[in-house]
Image (cartoon, rainbow, N blue to C red; front, side, top):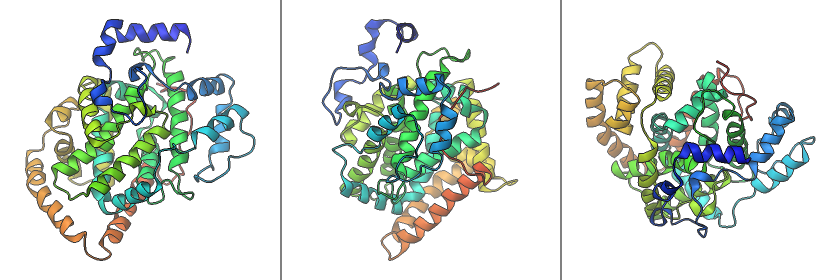
Length: 393
């Protein structure tokens, strides 16, 4: 990072004396790796950032994207012709951490299999509504290349989310490692490009804190909601689900010292980093309207589904976030969802122990995932690629 970039970051972040007060404290950190005293708000990706900046500056990204297009499996060799510095990076970045536990990852896959209905709803709709109420994330999405085509942007985000929840996520024939590494490269590209946008004035985007904030709107938010809804979860399943997300955020380049080691640490870190990083923005409101519109079209085009989707969004994220996102009240539907949801949960949980029900539920949930991707991409093949510019408008 250049001295000018560092100076911009410090200016945008305010006085140096305030850094310690807002960083992740020791009580909330309790990370997997030993602490170094670094503040994650001022840590980015020392390996990927200079590499991708160099690829962009020398005009190599279009060819890199072409070559990586069909690199899809975790065990697949890299295609010939990639720049040597990129090959060296990917060879290191695709390695699972030494603490990854394959037994827990397999158990997490089974948990996703039986709880996919809830997790897709929470990570997809709930996480989407929360992300638009995070000013830095909403603006980063809006002013980067993906902001000009939200269907494509959501489809690419869904590719990684679905990969994490797939049954073979970290197996050799899975694709979670590949999509995590590609997402890490995308983040590096956005960091380099977004600072060149006249609309971006917040220093270097997507710090390690920013990634953790998003992580908590997915993994931590989902587990808290499952507990709130009284979905039966064994200690082993909860630990396995956390482990799958710990591995994923490591693969996205977050330092082990910042990754919560337990759910208690995750809850504490979430409580510390989410409130100061959330609030309303014009960009967030616009993105929310687009996302809910997409959800309504996926559900039932031309019907009453948009009011229902508005009510569902409010039910998942609560009134404060919904007000920030300017999701209108739908009083009738809100009452229906609030009263029916506990009954639905009890009904589903009464069925789960029966033979073949988890398998049947997975088939239905997988069909829903594929439908969502098909709708968002209009049937076109879509994969995660490194951006070459910002929002064109």
